[in-house]
Image (cartoon, rainbow, N blue to C red; front, side, top):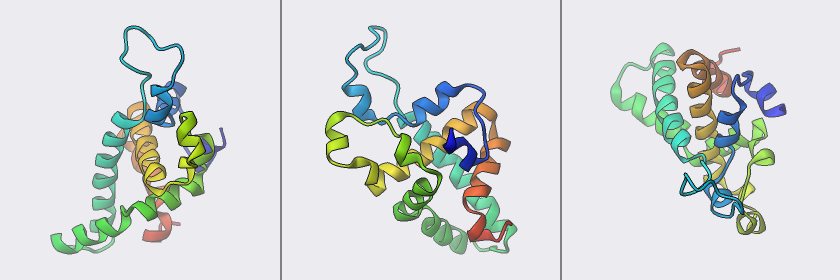
Length: 152
């Protein structure tokens, strides 16, 4: 997948990536749901995990780059995790092109919605963590934010 190329991470278990790229609107419209599940697994759980991983890695990067005051770290991290910034990064790696959306969400062009793109990026980071562990997720976050921290 081109998304994996952009992330610099290739999933061992592609189901993690598929789930991270499945918006809840897609699962709600699934014509053949598994009777064991209320709905198709979507990105929400991975998004929660990815948000926590982003917090941890960004905090580490900020400390390593010289931020020492808690207030400064928190303020800069809030800037870095703004919806618009995460949406931009999501578009850069091409997540919007492979996002699975329900019919109505597609009609509303949800693949361009900054909130959905930001949530998708967080879900992808969470999926990387689930698939390859913290070190793999850390490398992906470093790659995503390399321009912000001069990590080239």
